[in-house]
Structure formats: structure tokens, C-alpha cells
Length: 203
Image 1 (cartoon, rainbow, N blue to C red):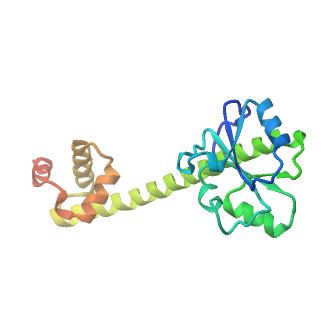
Image 2: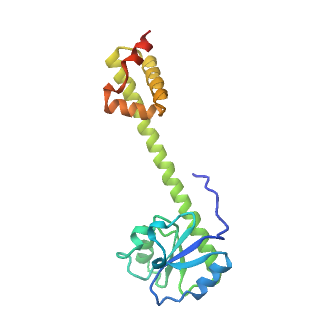
Image 3: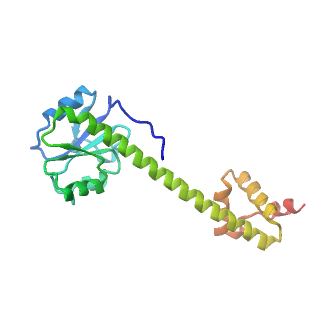
């Protein structure tokens, strides 16, 4: 479980609308303005400049989801699905794209804040869990590499496990990288360890 801080104030943030020109936005615009936000259409901003700390995507969930800009953008920022047809298949498709909250069309003012709260904090929680999982996997790979490197040094130099670990530690410090990263480099290129380091360790 992550300890992501809940976001409760959306002042200064920006709603980015992905919808056709015919969609009524007056209520949504007024609600966002009261919350200190602005509303723009995706066509008026650079999609590459979307910022998860500032932008909240508002996607017309009744539009086709298999084409257009939505598929490549919904992982870059929190997203709310605007839905008029609450079919399970349509809701699932939006969730698969990364939507973490929904607003029923026509938009009612009383539901906007809750949707923003769920979208932003749900997005942050998912990203936090993904980062934690990636870090865990990286550490696990690093531990495996470290064990392999120790065994490799023991086999090629005839030193003990404690001495092999110390060689890795000293050389990683000299190179200013983690011992796990150096172990990975050593496994990939066994000659990377300096003989001078071995000689110092033997002395």
C-alpha cells in the first residue's frame, strides 16, 4: 500500500476536454471555474505538453474509443469519462484506457467535485503502485545480479564470498554507482573488474 497524499484542492489545474464541438459544456465550465480551474479543448493545447500534476482529461465516453487521440493520452494524466450511455462494455473500455472516474451526461454540478477527487487520487494511487512494483522488481533483479557476480568472482579469482562482495563494493563506490548496477555490468562484461582491485583485495 502506498502513502500517496490525497489531493483535495484543484485550484490552478486545467480540464482538457476530448469531445465533439456539439457537446454542451456550460455546466462543466461553470463548476470548474468555481473550483479555480480552467477548461480547454484538446485541440487548443499541445498533447505532448500534458502534465499529470496540472491537467485532468475529460473524455466523451460516448464517442468512438478505438481511434483518435484518447488512446495515447489517458496514461499521461488523470481522466474522467463523460458518459450518457452507461453500458458495462462502454464503462469497461474507458477503464481499460485509464479512466478512474465518471460523470453522467448531462453534467450535474453536484457530481463534478467527487469525479475530480476520484480521478486525480485514483490516478496517483495507480501510478504510485506501478512505481513501487517497478522498484521492487528492480531490487529483485539487482539482488540476483549481485549473487551471480559474487559467485562469478569466486570462481574466476579463487577468493571467498566475503572478499568477492568487498571487491564489488569497493569498485562500485569507485565508479559511484550502486553495487547492484555494478554487479549487472560485471555479469555482462566479466573483464570489467579491475585486476588492481583484486590485487588490493588479496594483499
